[in-house]
Length: 517
Image (cartoon, rainbow, N blue to C red):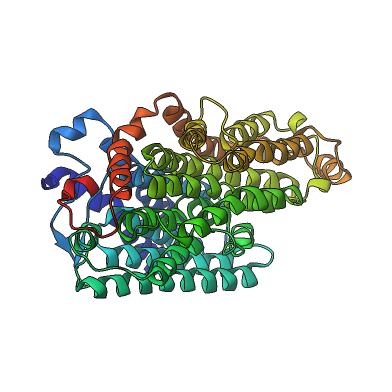
């Protein structure tokens, strides 16, 4: 396996650790001057985005492949990227930049501490996708979760205490269950946990004849599923996103939640073989429940941010189905589309949370019955919100379109009823999303809006909010018109996992490490 070139490896480490170091400085220097703290934080939010964009440029390849793991350990962790993690870390950096721009525009108590914790959260999330070490994978996830709880508890909105507690319980239990399953798997094949990587775990099982109990695979699968809001382990997500500060909702729902999906792909699907038996069916119908049942829950919401929070859970359904069809049926297009949708969803979801907060800032409410007719006062906000909604439901031109279309096409040989359930996600999401747009921006003007407009004119999006939104929707349009930016990296990985899915469980075969970089 080729070594990660010094230039690219150094840039990756800078992208991960710059937010963490700057966040630490802001936490220690809570009394730093506002202008200095703002400039310092903006640099830390911007640098990872610039670095990850560099990785996609042709000139970056002149310094060595950016999708080759580097075999140099730092603090016992091995850092590098593969064809799955590269698009995810780039999406995380862009979402983090938009969230950081929004955070810098907010007036909050203990502002330096607030910014420092958000930078910790961003750095931890980048580390999740930037390490090949399994313990490092978990370390960075927990490193990102702790500031998530603190930010929600102290800077969140209504119901923040119960939401933070619920998130803490669910996400801690989910992480511990999946880690327990991985530890049991390692012990089964005699692999030490201290320096184990995704490749080592994979090779240890596929070069041995040792079976893995279904209970261990289920423990790992549903542990990761809890972190990614797989039905019925999803109930923490909507209250948590609704109560959290907007930048936290953007990073968590857009990027950090993908930890669970990434774990399912890299460990459960590639190594533990979920293609046979009852577990495969349970996973499928839980995924379908995300699509259909949670989608129906969105119909009943009367609060804009609550609806978006539940919608984020519902949109995990097609991603789970795409992973399932690749891991169980050997259809590479399913995983390819699922990864694409993970990236596109992160961008559109973050944009919607950002714009919903803009509605709340101007009207003082998220409730549909207290909103209406905003389009006449905020035409730019209305246009951006409609664009983000179109992206979310898969309008051609945005990245979500290719992900959803790919998942549907990967099911062409599956039972018709399954195809109907999955296709229903477009119909269901279009209905509740467009109904929300009609109610908020084009509905009858409420007395709340009239009173607020009489007191002070309702302003449109400011320059900061426009910049953050353009970053997210612009990136979605770029991958929507040039999907090869993502698929050039994900296709080889998806095809390798599809081939693995068709092998007999744990049969000793000559698998090359490059297949699962």
